Amino acid sequence: MPVPSPLAGTPVSFVGAFPDPAIPLEPPLPEVAVVGRSNVGKSSLLNALLGRRIARVSRTPGRTSQLTVYRLPSLYLLDLPGYGWARASRAERARYARLVRGVLERRSTLSGVLWLLDIRRDPSPDDLALVRLLGERGLPVLAALTKADKLTQRERDRRAATLGSQLALPADQLQV
Image 1 (tube, rainbow, N blue to C red):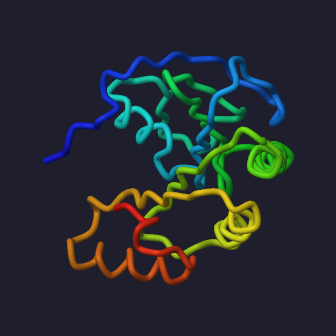
Image 2: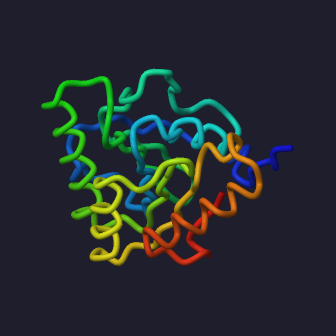
């Protein structure tokens, strides 16, 4: 049975969707980036965390194409385009990658990253590049392992341990 989110009922507002990773936000508040491969469930998780539909959920990967910003009372959530496969042109996927990298490398107000990973999949080259970038930047990271409902408890425990090892993330930075 799902546990209610402690953020459910928190006031949240849509700020905007921006193509520029350096867009300044007013007032300045800490920012948490939500990042992950296309089709990993970023929009679904945002909706579940906030207890209502704020992000558009689609069956077609790659619908988020800009930096989408939501304001909570004390921080901004930055919903980033997915990386990897998406139903978009090669040029568009490259633009998504530049946007994600720009946000993660250059935003001085970025305070942390919520990184979504499909528990059933081994890390891709993009995942490994991202973990290196996050390590270089020294940002706090929480890896949320999605799609765990598709595995048995035993498989979940094994996959979580494997992913933690492959990505060199301690157990307290992984959440199934």
